[in-house]
Image: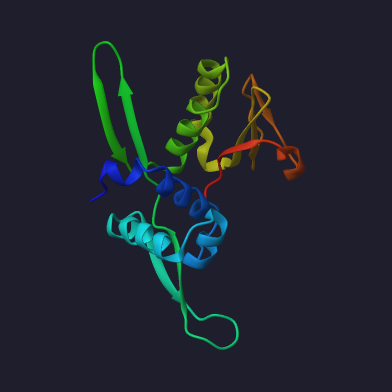
Length: 171
């Protein structure tokens, strides 16, 4: 069971951000964060107990004992909303498309409502879409078919995604 307290620590958030990039060993995490391996190991144990990350024993290059490499177990999102009429919080296990919506909501732009509307419109074609990205207040889409959606730029070459924020790219 994931507890919200596990996600409220800035140190744990930093570890999660680093593990989102790629799996890493405690030694590598300690070097990047400029802290001790003991401290990192303690934080990793808490995150592993909470079910957020998983450790895997890997044989190192050359001689020596195997090392544990940690990676994120699955996508989770902690959501909190406070308004004059209600306050809600919870942890969800979002789909790839729900992650795209959450990423778009976190981008500081004045066109958020319009972009969100276009993103939801793209859902009809989700099985044909390879990538959805955000760049300069515009949604970019790479799909294996032609999409005619006003306000969405369809791209053909991966280079057109440079300097963009990837919202959706199913694994």
